[in-house]
Length: 264
Image 1 (cartoon, rainbow, N blue to C red):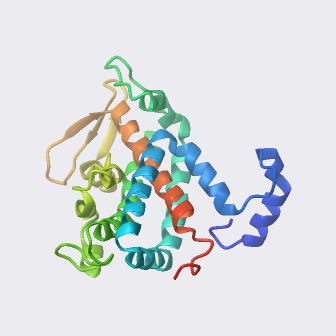
Image 2: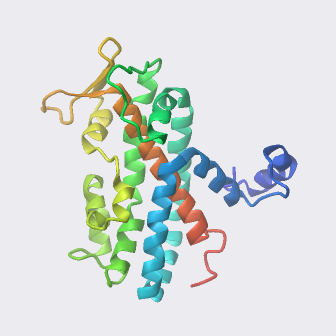
């Protein structure tokens, strides 16, 4: 409701229901968004948040004015679309949460999934687009870590090593993470990106075999058929949603969209 501009309805709901959800006082909607994403994103979201925060602090010591300019640029040009798109991606994921939760205990403990474990699928037709849709959304907003990396490396936020920011935004989404792939901190934001599965899902070339427990996908129309264990597909979906959740937490806590002009 808040992200769609229904601030009055949102405020009334929070005022009426906040105690039921453990809040002593009515929180700001961004506090609620942060809390939901932090819980959903689990350990991986924290890793993403911490990595971005570490580089943000580093950039602030090197080029504070460029960091302020980056903050204003992202809030002005990208933040509304990022938050609304994150809501769509997370909502699609939560509609079938029981499907994805089958492997969460393994991910939380960083334990390799045993070959004998074969999670079931009751709604693959409904979930086969979750990864591809989340990929499209996340890749659209990798401009934030990419520009942050520019500042860390001593350049203006909108100046890449070989590109302008306009040229960067024209790049295929499959390669936008290359702008910060050599930064060991920020590389975690691109963890789990698989463009082949994204392509397969968006071209309808992906299907699940319940007998084998494998997902068959064709990355290109003329390419050969590839396979991935369904458990690994679920893990990829969880990871990319958790990455989005961590990025939301960072934007809310560090960029403070509730006060976009306070430091510009």
